[in-house]
Amino acid sequence: MKTYRLKPYFFAVKKTILIFLLIVLGSISCKNGTKEIDRLQLAKHYYKVLDNSDHTEIKTLLTDSLLTRETEYDYEQTFSLKEYEEWLQWDALFEPTYNILQIAEEGETVKVTVSKLDQRIAFLHKKPIVTDQVLHFKKNKITSIETTNYVIFNDSIFVKNREALVNWIAKNHPELNGFIYDQTKEGGEKYLKAMALYNNRK
View 1: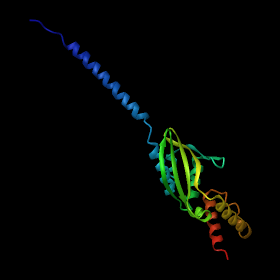
View 2 (view 1 turned 135 degrees about the vertical axis):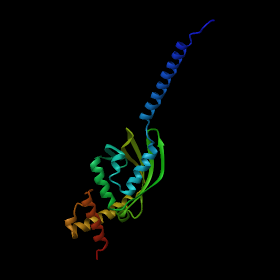
View 3 (view 1 turned 120 degrees about the vertical axis):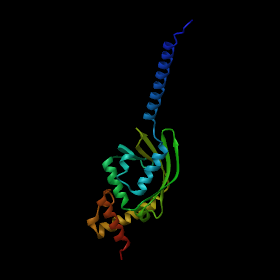
View 4 (view 1 turned 180 degrees about the horizontal axis):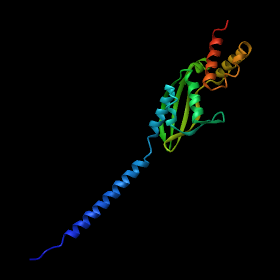
């Protein structure tokens, strides 16, 4: 009777299949490990954090520093995480409302049209300020935000009301001088006090 030695052949096939499966699983796991998060969702979450004035959550969305740039005014500022958290506490005092009007992912950036209204803007501008912004990312976090266009912003009204406030405070409550530039929690409290005093002037 003729016998066939099949066992070595089957073992070789099983070994080949096992190696193939390990390669496939390894490849899937590497892809998942390096998969980038949804930039659109990250951008939406960022504005939600601003709207909620959640300074503890903001550090999970940003790199070690945040570059902010205003194209029209040729101005830029870099915040450390600590400085940006401090700015957010200043911003929170004015009870801001951020609304995303348009949002779209373009390449490796997210373009957003956003409106903002708070007590300070209502005092100086009388209505929401609407801007176009571009968010840039690095290592799945926001690294810079560029304001490329002021869609709704009346510069003359804003400046006129700001100067009236600053001049009146300088004359009547000089102890509050400098409030306009102090973007800390203490500075924000002085700003609110200055507006209240100005609104209640006789």
